[in-house]
Length: 197
Image (cartoon, rainbow, N blue to C red):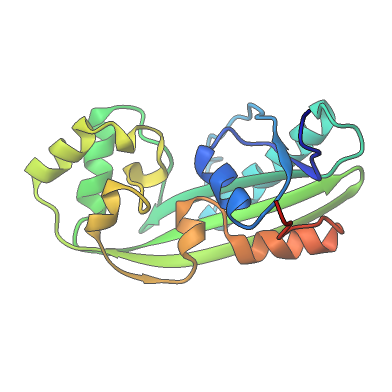
C-alpha cells in the first residue's frame, strides 16, 4: 500500500527528499525538466526564484496527484557576480573550486509552492567560507564523483564539508532546501509536517 502524499516534490534531488523526510513530510517525488539557463543580466536571487517557481508551476501542470500542492526549489552558488550551477565537466568543476578556495561565497536558495492560481515563494541567503584548497585535493575531490551534480561543485553534507571553515545562515539551504522557509510554505498551504511514522 502506497503512503499517502500531502504534496508533490518537483525535483529529482535525493538531498531535498532526505531533508523533507527528516522533518516527517509525506510527499511524492515527480521531477520536472526546466531550462536552468541564466538570462542575460539576471541577478542571482531573481534567477533562483524564477527557476524554483517554474519547477513548481510545471510540476502542477503535470502532477500525478490532482489538486495536491507542488513544491519546487532551486539553489545556486554565487562567487562575485558569477552564478555557479552544476559543473558541466571536470574543467568547470576545478575552476569553480579554485574560485571558491580561501574565500567566502553566497549560497542562494528559493523554494516555491503552487496549487492552481495560488503560488508562494520564499528565499534564503547563506554565506559559506572555504579554507584554501590545493590543486591536488581539488583533483582528488573531483575523482570521487561527488561534485558532478552539485551546485558550485561541492556537497557540504558530504566530502566537501572538509573545505568549509564557516557558515552564516541556513545549513539546509546549502544542502539544497531551506527548511525554515519550506515549513513556512507548508503551513501557508495547510500541509501537515512532523508526522508520526
